[in-house]
Image 1 (cartoon, rainbow, N blue to C red):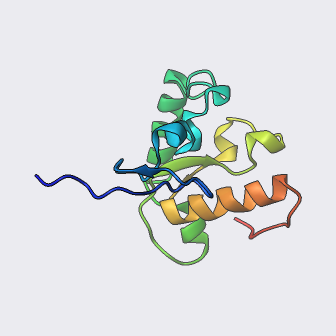
Image 2 (image 1 turned 45 degrees about the vertical axis):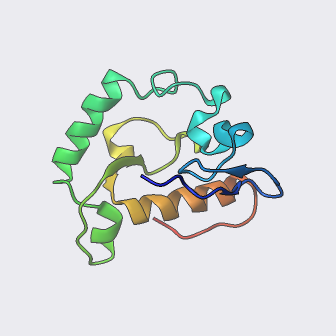
Length: 127
């Protein structure tokens, strides 16, 4: 198999080159994705251990594996995750009433809106 062609690191202003599939040089591999940030803690440390997995399965069954925001907008999409309606960072809980099945596009848009709201940039779309 031919060697990969080196390309510039994806980290803004980094002059290093890399052949890594994710596009980040050795110095920026840990920054390649936020989930690798040590300050964030493991999924279990953040409250997503065995209890969460059982809760997730229960909510997916309750919502029949369908994205609830899409259903509210007269669309039908398969859900890939279970999300907090009111984010935990904004006082939400893990109660079933605060959880819903959600598809990837809706989850991405909702998370982005929550992030902007947390930074005081704007309100974002309602979900």
